[in-house]
Length: 501
Length: 110
Image (cartoon, rainbow over all chains, first blue to last red; front, top):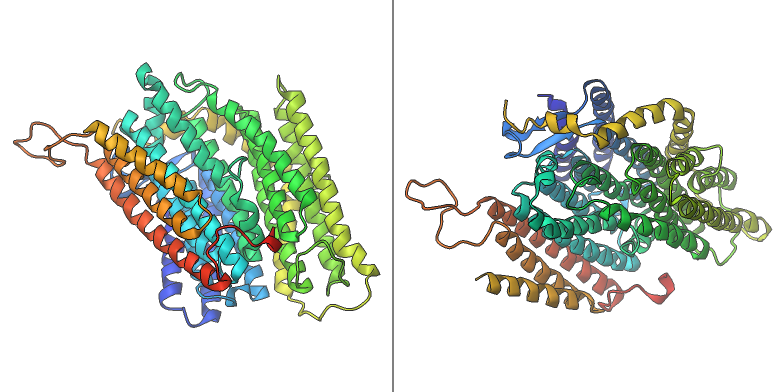
């Protein structure tokens, strides 16, 4: 058994507790240890990524209990990719938080950060549906703390909404899991994949209800219309670095949909058939437009970034809803891109707001300190977010368009292209208000320290986007194989050793 | 007994959803608590409802009740209890900061 698989869960857990208990009064030490832990997480996740590529799916039996009786963690290409992505984003954003001093604005930032990473990595790695719920709760409870980090009236109010919405989601998750368990008697994902095709016809209705409830839970996480209402206020009010880390949290929803609905609710399952694709596609297309109109209409920079995140989730779910290997590969390429681009956009929004004192776009203020550099960062991240050449957003959308040829082609292509155009318009308007109108406005904003580490971290995310663009050839080849393995999960199921051995 | 459990779950869910749609945070939190009670009862029922049968191995037992939902419901209770505590603290913080416990955001922040 490869014990490295559990490290992405255990390492942040230990480091979070250690930071909380031992380093709670010394911020400098907390910074060093927490950054070192995230760096170690990145190193381990890259090693796991290599393992998963070479060896195929590997299972870690917790307590050495055989599946499906014990809980398992499963390392396959998809989970390894998502863990590595999380670790990289977390490292860059953590450096930003240290560089800007966000981590000293409230208590226990680094401890919460590590618990957040534990929850996200656990959710990506687990092979058990109830354990997925538990890791969702771990990542949520840490995110509640991070979301209200620094305090303030509006942030707390948005935080209460966020918590209430997600508690509702958790309840729905439990209802769905209990229904699945009552019908099948198992919650191990591979075991479900084996048992669901032989479901007696009398249980079809129950299983459909459970599947749709589960889809709604993941749609809440992935901010899919009509369950997206928590996102704009949460992301706009959360501290900048926290919002940037949350860019990977919506991807947890997308990951869970890809994992569950290719593994145990595939399209050829007699009980559910095309039900989920038929629900997901219209929702994704409407999400595209809700996000695009939001980008156009927002009067506040934080909201622009939040609605841009909603559009990118719409694009991602449009590809996921095809449930074909080509579209899944395109979705994964776009998911990595949009995590990095979304993170960068939130960091840049925070750079602007901290210098301007306000995120309001209805008034022109004098040029920012370090105006040129921030403006060029914004330009790059806007190009990436809107999906214009030369960055990976363009390639991602191109792959998605290419993978959605078929009967719905006119609708899907139209929706993606028109919404991209609206996002371009919205972001251009935002950029010209912030960086061009300001040149014609007399006066000076108060001086602001340069914070080189913050710029390095933001630049690092943008550089990763450029690298993801340059490496698109090998990356898509790798992702195509990943998607093929997701849609024919025999190796995943075999790794669980359900029959004993 | 099925009717009793089913109607209790249904009633608590209905009342919970009604309360969640209220505009102030106190009824919303009570609604969430009710929903989690409904959910816990539902998880219990997912192992089929039987009376007087042991969950663990026994030589004299005529049959068994499914022990796994009991483990699941224990996890769910602990988590929902912790989450309710968190949201109570946050709602209290929001109430103290803003002077009212309305759940919606201020007009200047939309």
